[in-house]
Image (cartoon, rainbow, N blue to C red; front, side, top):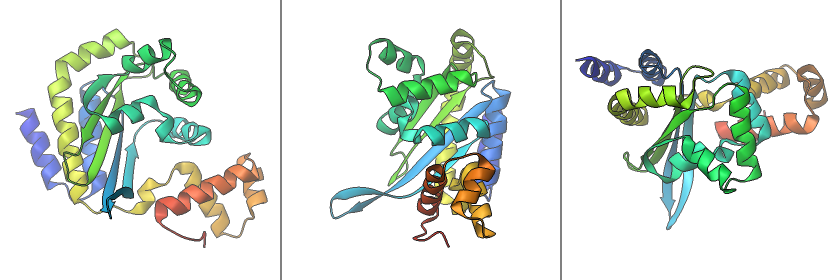
Length: 233
C-alpha cells in the first residue's frame, strides 16, 4: 500500500524538485538519510557516444560536496564509477575490498577518506544502467552519520526491494521532466558567479572566499560547462 502511494506521488509530481523531495523523505523514513542521484543524457553522434546533458541531485552536506569538487570530480568516487558501469546494487564494502587489494587509485582513496571524515563510512550504490533510452544514471545512498556497515546492512536487507524500485521510478520520472540547468551548480560555483556578476575580480573573489585565483577560475569553468555557456558573461 505504501509503495502505491509512492507511485502515485511520483507520477503526479510536476517538477524535479517535488520528485526529489518525495524520494529523499521516503528514503529517510526507511533509514537512508543521505542520497545522491546522477543522471547523464547520452547522444550517439556518428557512432561516437557523448554526454549531452546531466542532472545531479543530493542532500549530502554542502561542505562535503564542496570538498569533493575541490579534490577533483565525482568521477573519482569509486561508488560513482561502479554505478556508471554496472546495473543493480552494491555495498560500499566493494570499495574497501578493492582498497585492501591495492586496486584503488590515489584520488579514489582520498575520496573514501573524505567521506569517512564526514562520518559516511558505509552505504550502497545503485546502477540504473540504460533502463531509460539514451540515459545512464545511478544513486548513492547511506544512513545517518556514523552508522556502521552491519547496521546499514540490516536496513538494506529489509528495504532493498522498495529502495531499488523507487530509484528506478524516480529515474524514469526525472527523465521526463524539464529541469533548470542551475540545479547542476554547486554552492561554491553559485557563490563565485554571484560575486563576479556584481563586478568583483577573480583576485577579489579568491580573497573573499579564501581560495586561490586558480581555484576560482576552475569553479567558473565548471559553472560555464554546467550551464552550457561559452563565456562567463
